[in-house]
Structure formats: C-alpha cells, structure tokens
Amino acid sequence: MTAKNVSVRLLLVLLFFVSPAAPLLNGGGVARAASREPVRAAHGMVASTSRLASQVGVDVLKRGGNAVDAAIAVAFALAVTYPAAGNLGGGGFMMIRLRDGRTTAIDYREMAPAAANHDVYLDATGQPKKGEGGSLVGYRASGVPGTVAGMELALKKYGSGRLTWAQLVEPARRLAAEGFALPYGLARSLKGNAKELGAYPESQKVYLKGGQFFGEGEVWRQPELAATFARLQRSGPREFYEGRTAQLIAEDMRAHDGLITLEDMKNYVAKERVPLHTTYRGYEVISMPPPSSGGAVLIEMLNILEGFDLRHMGANSSERYHVETEAMRRAFADRAEYMGDADFVSVPVAGLIDKSYAESLRKGIKMERASTSAEVKAGRPAGAESEDTTHFTVVDAEGNCVSNTYTLNDSFGSKVVMKGTGILMNDEMDDFAAKPGTPNAYGLIQGERNSVAPRKRPLSAMTPTFVLRPDGSLWFAVGSPGGPTIINTVLQVITNVIDFDMNIQQAIDAPRIHHQWLPDEIAYEPFGMSADTFRALEARGHRLVAKPRYMGDAQGIMIEEKTGVRLGASDPRNYGEPVGY
Ligand code: DON
Image: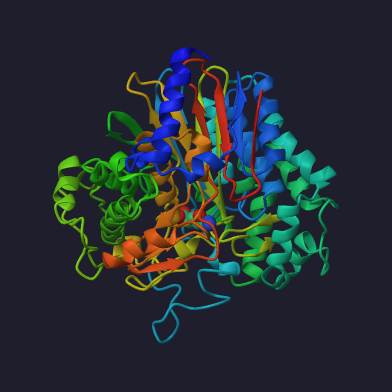
C-alpha cells in the first residue's frame, strides 16, 4: 500500500467518525460494510439463483460456447433445478449485448390462447374469478409458453455455432434424469407450496413424492421432464409446438377445460425487439421494451431522479427514499394508464422515456412533503411485477453478455403439470388486467391497454438491463424477479452503483423500498429501514408498510474497469451463487 493510499484511508476513517458529512463519503453504507466480495473470474461468469445451473453455464463457456449458448443451457437447467420459476411452460425476455456493441432483445413472453377474450376471467356478476377457472391457478390460467421458441431464436441468430441445440439441452436432460441432491432452499419451497401443488395429481407426483415431502439432500429425479428434453433433443425445438409435447399439452388442456389448443401451440412466435436506451449521469442504460413495462418505467424513473443530487442525500437517507418514491409513484401511474402489448395497442414509449417529460414531472415533486397517489394521475407523455420469477446474467470470455429474466409468474405458476410431460405451466394470464381498474395478484392497477385479447402478450415488469461506461463498454448487467418490485429493484441497484459507488454485490445487498402508485404506500424490507428514517418519511406524509419478505433476487455481473475481471454477484435474499472460470 502506498503512503498516499494510507493517508487517504486514514482521512476517510476520521471523516466517517467525526464529520456530519459522512454520508457523502460512505453513502450511509451499512450494506457496504456487510457485503462479501463479488465472485471473481478472468474469463466468463454466470450469476443465477441455482449453483447447479450456474455451473452448467460455465461448463458451456469452457467448451467454447458464447454467452448466448450458455444462457440457453442455463435456462433449460433452471427448469429442472429451480422449478418455481425456471421453466419450459412459461416465458420471458433475453437481452443480448454482443462484444461489438450490438444489443437486441428476444421476447418470448407467453401469448394469450385464441379462446381468451376481454372478459374470459370474469364471473356472471362481472367480478374476476377466483381459484380454478380464474387467471391465477389451474388449467385456464396459462398463456402459450414461449421459452423453447425464445431459446431457438436466440441460438439461431446469436449462438456461437460451436454447440448444437441437442448439446445445450443435454445438461438439463441429465439433471432431470439422474436427479440431484435437493438443496435446502428447494426442499423448503416444495414444502411451502405443498397445498397448492397437491391439488393436482400430476404436480403431486412430480413435486411431492405422491403426497410426502422430498427432504433436503435427497436425490430428486424428474423422469417425464427428462423424456420431454430427450424429445426436444431428437426432434428439435418445433417438437414442443407441433410434436408429441404439443399434443400432450393440448390433450390435457382439453380434458380439463383449459384454454390452450394445438393450434395455439403451433401459432406461438418469439420476436426480436429493439431495446430502449437512455443515459443516466452519462452512463448508457439499455433495457427491455414492451411487452415489458420494465424498461420504460425504469427509464422514466431514472430520468426523474437525474435531476436530484442523490449522492449528496446519502444512500439510506429519508431524502433519497422520498425522491425515489415520488419517481416510482409517477412512473407506475403512467404504467397503469399507458402500457400494454405494443403489437396490439399504442404505447407512447418515446414520450414516456423523454427527458423533458421527466423534467415536467419532477416539477411536481416537493422535497418537504409526499404527494398523494390520489392527486398524481398518469402524466401526459408526448404521443399519447421472491422466487416466483428468476433472472440470470452471463458474460463470456469475448465480452458478449446476456441478461435474462423468465418466469411462470407466481411461484410454481398455475401449479399444474401437464400430464406425461413433467412440464409445469405458467399463470401468466394474471398479468393481464382481468378487469381493467381492478388490482391483480400484485395489487397492480392496470388499464384497458392491458386487457385480455387473443394472441396478445400480458404486460410484464421484467427488466433485464445493461449499463455501459461512457466509452461504450459494458459496465454491468442485472435483473431480478419480484413482480412490480422488479423495476424498482433494478432502479435501486443502478443508482447504488452510479450514485453511491457501490460494487455490484454491495448494490444488490443494500436494503430496498418499493412504491407502485397504488396502493399509496412505501414497502420496506425486514430490518431494511432505521426507525429514524421511518419517522422522517412519515413526517413528510408517506405511509410505510413493513413487508414480511425480502424484495427480489437480483443476479448481476460487473466488469472490473482496469483488469476486465468478471465480478459475479447473487442476491443474499435467496440461495443463488455465481460461478466463473
Ligand atoms: O412478468 C411479470 O412482470 C410477472 N409475471 C413477474 C412475476 C414475478 O416476478 C414473481 N416474482 N416474485
């Protein structure tokens, strides 16, 4: 250590203890002191919520696969090792940034079956149906799954060409066939969801040992899922949509009054979309366009916050939470009014992410007092949603990067396994507004633009994101589950890094808050807010609610500027682990 370094450190330590300006220097950083170092690797890194799946990805990288190849293998592996959210029966978004700077977004969100219409989830009295028949559980809750088509598209266009489809499916098939020792987190989650899963014999067979519990450390096999993977290997991805797997899904749906038909399976299409961009304090932020609301809402909030000196306020200060809340309130009000599948309805994205629009919204924010959501309606932009989802991030040796969030919506989706396939289906139809203006499972109010229609994609909050350095090189990539809290988790990770100089692990560890316009309340995590901060926010007129659960499960990778070392960080809120080489 140089003499200069020593004296700078000494000064910082002294200032920390004696200066009222300490928050300026340490960002108020309890979280910083409590964070472990990110996992370091020279070549490639996979950060996911399952160590087994991260390892699958790294093995692909070591065999010469690129980040996209690895991401595909990770996505399939998570369908086996993290069944609450990893899937074949769901959908999601894959953001890709190639080493040459090109970015793209693969949209493999579920599509509504042809039989789904505006009022499909309303009962005779016009109220959203609960239980079987509704949009949350059972055979009618699923959209047509997009994961297989999304992986097919990603491989065709952006795979390295060095590994085949069948090779990338193989680790998942093997994990399903040979089984693996149940990690504690998964054993606990199977037990925690036993009641719902137990209601469906096929699900009970797969996840509950036919009525008993699989215990921690027990080897857990999924033979029918393994056979499904084997069919996908033999016949290719279209098998899922046109072959035996599609037939099995359609037959089981028909037998149980489900909505999805063989025709719906055949008609599923994954799409490539153009990512949304903005800059935040000089750093480029690239995120997911519709049918996710994630990118647009994230950018609207960053644009609003750019006008405040967050660094000066301090990381855990009531001032920071106040202005973030006000930004969240406004952007989520716009989400409710303006957002839906842009293939079906007009979404004023350009207006929503416009910096001058953010400036006009910023003017309505008072430092001394909370707004109320009753007074904050959607603005006038020009032209006009734990463990229930999962995110993973991959960086390869060449510098290609994938930021992928995919889901079954709720934990274990619709809870229904399709007979003979081992495939658990999503309940993504609940991301539509079953009855516009009435809250969904996440309490989100959504508008007519997000009503149900055949072949439409439900609006998502998933926010796979990249942040670049001013020279255009990749700085970090991140994303998270958490329903609507996803967008705010990504927002807070980004501001933690940019405004408070946290490394990727610190930025992910730090406590989070959430506000989504309605209900008009700030949600905070267990032990996530000091009593003083709580009172200071209350004094401004905010209502605060303690959440019993932590928010999100972020998975990020940062590139160390001087060395190019990949820094992997998994959220301490769940059991994930980055693996690098
Ligand atoms: O697409 C969405 O926004 C939701 N289906 C995500 C659900 C989710 O993150 C649940 N996780 N806690």
